[in-house]
Image (cartoon, rainbow, N blue to C red; front, side, top):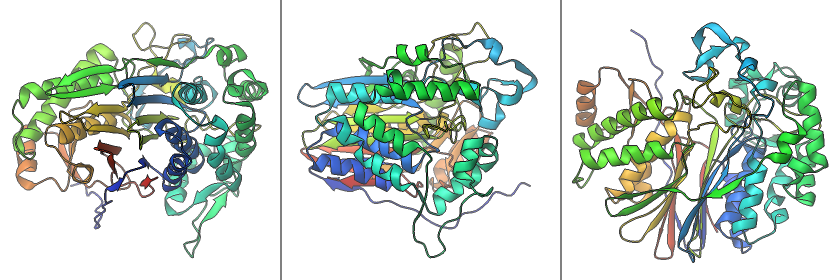
Length: 521
């Protein structure tokens, strides 16, 4: 009998309320930075941008300016929801021939279902890097929706980059966990494994800081010249030279031509609620499919989730993943190092922002002259040619992100999203149901047990699920497991949630992320 590790502790994070705006993110320093922007008179988009930029300096294994993402924005005065799309893009010179299939196997190292590629060149190294869209997206969002200059929004991240990466037990454990991959590349080794070993936290519990190479200088240059400098300025030339020296196919033309765009969201009228989510290249269609299926399986929700509710959750997820694999492309990653941010301001504007560099530390390529840690977005593509998600020059791949904004039937708004690869949309789907079907507040939703169905037959249940519900699920789904919602491994995604009601917001960061925090303006 295999023995699973036991964690004998209980984690909880109380919901936070505020009248002048809230910021929820996966790191307390990032949430605090966003809250200070709100205090300076910035709006929810300003706060989200500042929070996201800060995350790139305090959790670089999760996200940063070398990645991409999606932002869902609700403008209260206009009563309008829009999407800022800044996903990563295949280089114009990329080709399926760059990713020859291995003799057997799948990309199990990052839990993808694509066939394995020889030497995992789509997972790490220079050919794994896709064109980053992050700064294009932040610049566009700031220009279209922000109220403060971009130079002010990046200032907290500049200061943190100059100080360095905060080293506590969790950040040290993440570097240790990923050290074998980091040591394959010179600049990441010099930065994160400077003496050949992962760092250790201060024995007295005090913070120490790890220098982040040239990242602070790069942030200051972006502050002075604007985010466009990453794509067309002198900074872009430095980035392309470093990329080419490393063996990447990304060219100056790739950076020059990249465009972030503002689009309309996908929309679902769910019962009497309005549900807005990101577009066709995200998990947005899947969560809409799951909610539509849930509506038919559970036409009259009970007062609280019961056995039949969780059975309906499971059936809706199985149905949605079957549709996703058949019609939208298969094998979206089971694991992923992504960040999610939710923000609201005193005007009622709301932002749901998901950003990522993909795997832990992305491609593991850190550019020596700029300190930028780059994504491994080419892993999102099917290495087999001719498919709907195959490698094509200039194509943007399918992904798992689904930043959500919704309006309940009583007029209350909510922002919701998560990180966690293909665990993202099952978590967001259930939380949306907790909010809309069962009228839970942020604190109740945060502590309501969840299940996960992520594209295989396996059904995972949180260990605090009531026994009668767990027994019913076990009887219907032979492939099942019961696991704690623990720090590592995380099997149920890491969501963020803010609810806005009559001028007061309530936010929750979901366990078990140790750094996550909701900060009030």
